[in-house]
Length: 153
Image (tube, helix red, strand yellow):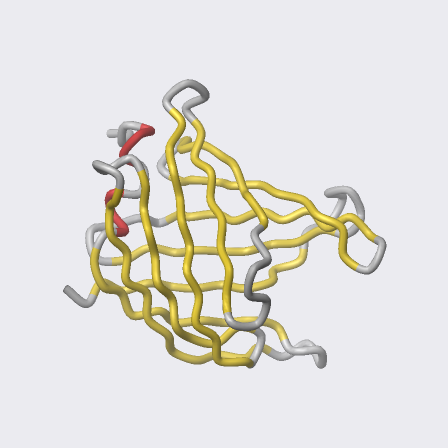
C-alpha cells in the first residue's frame, strides 16, 4: 500500500546507522560508517535530520531539512554541511511507487550539474539512499554517494 505523499518521510524519524559508500578518483569505492538522526518538526509537515559520517572520504557533520507542500504534493529538501557551510541547494520531488526521487541543478566550475537523490527499499528497519549526478544534461548519471540505513531505535 502506497504511503500518503504528506507522510513520505515519517519512516525516517529516529536514529539510524549509515553504511556510506562513495567513489574514489581511482574508480574504487570508499566505505565507512555514519549516523543519522531525524525528527518530525512543524507539526509533522517537515523532517529535520542531523548526519555525521564520511562524504567522499572526508568526515562531515550536516543538517538537512525536508518540507511537504500540500498544493504541489512535492517535497523540498535542502542540506548544508561542514565542507560547504552556508551552501543550500534545493531538491524537489515526489513519492511514487514506494520511493521518493528528488531533483536539483546548479552551476559548478562553469558547468551545469544535475543531481538526483533517491530514497528506496524503505522497510520498517532499513532504507536505501542514492545520490547521482549528471554533467551531460542527463544523458548519463554517475553514482556520487550511496547509503544503506539501519534503524538503531
